[in-house]
Amino acid sequence: MPLEYLGELTGAFLNCRGLMSPEFASKFVEELRQIITERLVGMSDKEIKELDKEALAEVLQQFNQLLLLSKAEPEIHEQIEQMQLSFSVRFMKTTYLEKRLKGISDLRTIIERVDAKSLLEKTDKKVRPFLLGSEGQKIKPT
Image 1 (cartoon, one colour):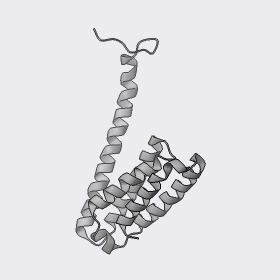
Image 2 (spheres, rainbow, N blue to C red):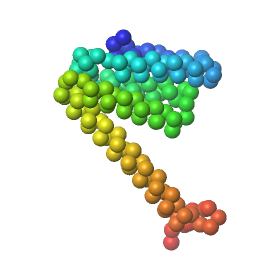
Image 3 (tube, one colour):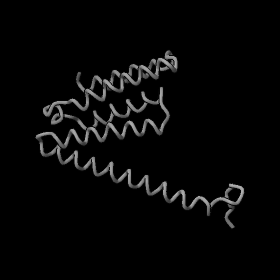
Image 4 (cartoon, rainbow, N blue to C red):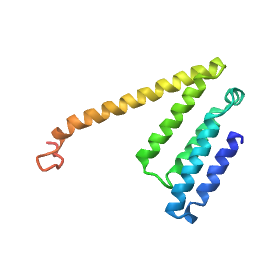
């Protein structure tokens, strides 16, 4: 199935979100996530060479919206990061130098994002006691 059709497929299911019960949406979205992930990670070298960056970004954006039907945001971000990591690894395994470099660049971006998030969480834990009063309320600036 061409990548463009994946975007249209997820868009069609997004339009039906009001008709799905939460239980059905959860099961359905999980099965669709597996299918889409397998399709994208299983792309041939030729497909990767011809891959349009904007089309992939659109599919991931629509996929993100689809995941919102059944999952909490932190879980969605983790799944999207896992997919991006899978793409990066797949790109690095291709025979085309341009896509290998893109895979390395994407992997570096993911690592930098994770490092920044980790640093922010550590800093937040250390700074929070100084910003909160003894009862856990924010201290008003003077």
